[in-house]
Amino acid sequence: MEFKTAKGVVFTGFATGELKEELLSNALCFVQPSTIEGMPLSILEAMGYARMILASDIQENLDVLAGHGSTFKSRDVDDLAKKLSEILSRDSSINKAEGEKLNKFGLENYDWDEITDKVEG
Image 1 (cartoon, helix red, strand yellow):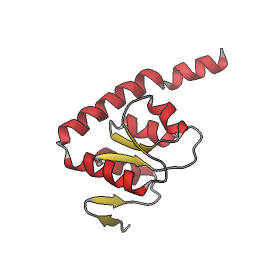
Image 2: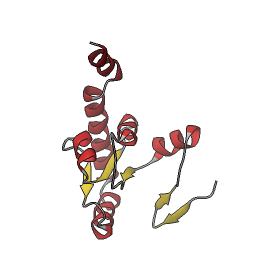
Image 3: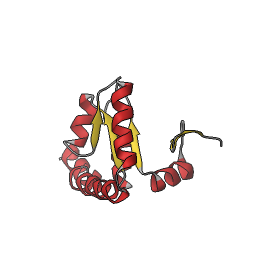
Image 4: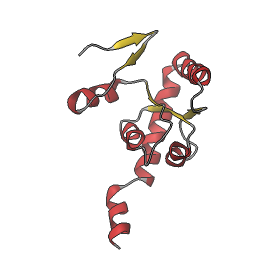
């Protein structure tokens, strides 16, 4: 599979299975630019890989992130570029620490066993 790249950013397109696992395991940051979402499971999945997350500021993303990660103004390419540039230019230990916080937050707040117990309850 061939990816488009620009200044260190890889535009993967749709990825599944082992390729997706490899990308999430090695990404510095996961970007979720959606303008419409339900429950953004891709953000939860990125949390599981302890990735830094940059997401559009639509309500669904804000609800899942609950103040964690970083956001940009939805549909604002300049704001997205600014925030992504900030993430790419800072010390990688900051992004790693933020990813670990997101992972912990995700595990504490989005446990499937607990969620299914509540639904069945």
